[in-house]
Length: 92
Image (tube, rainbow, N blue to C red; front, side, top):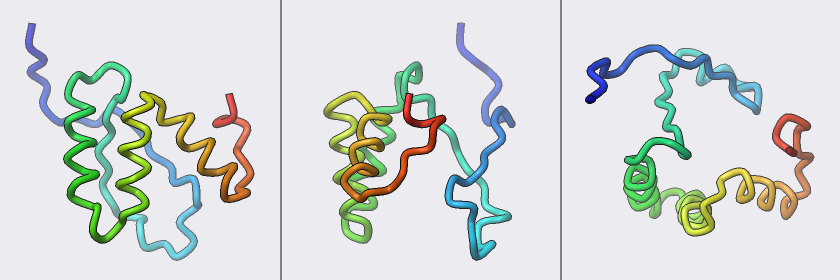
């Protein structure tokens, strides 16, 4: 059966970096379930293609995560390479 809800409020988002400038206080975000949404991979491939010129490292990270099927592993690896502490919630 088709889901007829369209876009609706389902998540509360909090920035991990704390938004030190306040620039993003009124921003809107769109969440994609990378595990269960059958359209997620196509959406991320399109996003990686779209951002490749201005944000090549982000595009590369997205493509690597898609290839390995693990965004949490990709994020952990990137944080380890940069020497960024991994928050306990994310380290699992």
